[in-house]
View 1 (cartoon, one colour):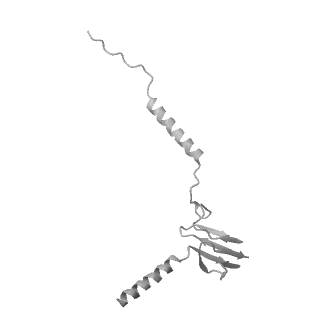
View 2 (spheres, helix red, strand yellow; view 1 turned 60 degrees about the vertical axis):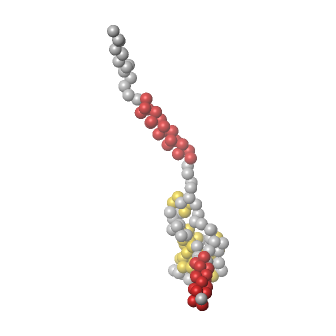
View 3 (cartoon, one colour; view 1 turned 180 degrees about the vertical axis):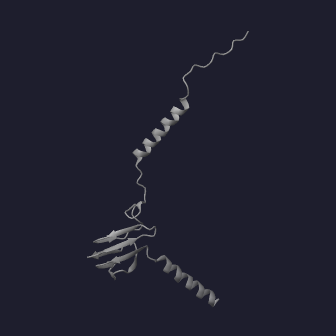
Length: 132
């Protein structure tokens, strides 16, 4: 029973530690970089959570989200819950659908189908044989 209680306590502590793991990684590239009030030495990285503020003086920081999106910071930046919908390092990440282009594509496809189904030669149909 004692080992069961110790095991449950260890599991609870490990679960709490995993739940509090950093959401993003902040890498310092020169200058002074502070994450949530903590200093990050040049060429080193630090974990950060949503709401933490990254402040950079005289250099830059790279904020990398779990999906690989990297945001370059020169100044200050507040860590978001999720990566930005448009990620400069990856191109389009979120939904930025251009509905006008989608509509034009559908119209062209519908026109092509209409031409194909009504196409063919314009010869009249042969006469039906008459019955005697």
